[in-house]
Image (tube, rainbow, N blue to C red; front, side, top):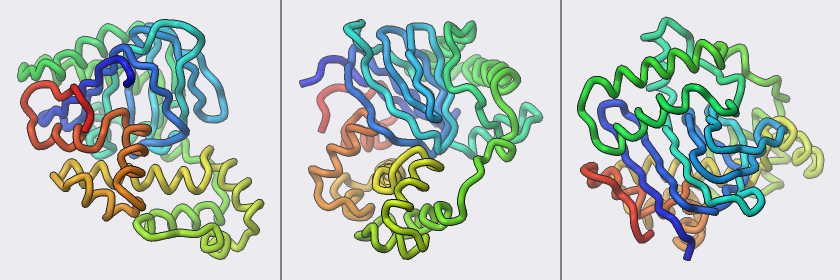
Length: 279
């Protein structure tokens, strides 16, 4: 069994999740999120690939990920196991924050900030969320941190949209509409009017991820939304197209870092920290 502890808390007032991983070595395969991620490496060294670039992450480095940024992450060398803090910020919440700051919806232009001087602010804010603080200082810290991040490391999201071939966009739309069904590569090729090899090359180039991995990530993101509403892991697996419960649990743990039942409990019992044996 993997060492370490995984703590997750949902903050109702800020409407975002705070993750705390301590002493883990788990790799995360190519995937993307439908929310913004602001993270901090506190211990350990990781290798991350994002936007066709490779980064080495060291203690004190911050991560800034936009919705849809495909990335991978794994332990690097024999360094200490990973200690990591992360805020998951839904797009509507980020829109509200940006509006309060007089900015459009942001697109982070730098995914790694080395030895960031903002690390202590993020650590303090993150710990207040984990501790369940109700002081308005927590919201104040959030806005001060985001003002610095948006001023230094973002531009309007609309200006960051990558040029994308129409064929790839049509495949993405098809997958987003039919993710819960059984999908074949032949269907995607007909949708894009491309051969299998041409589709795979084009899709991977523009999305940074294969069509199948894109589909699995869509399913996991939809399953997260169902679990947050109290749907059982078994039903969430069925509704999102996973072939069996074991397949769903393995993929969920691989992408999210905790098991589906643990994630669901965060929203059923919002008092205190939620960690321990995975379900």
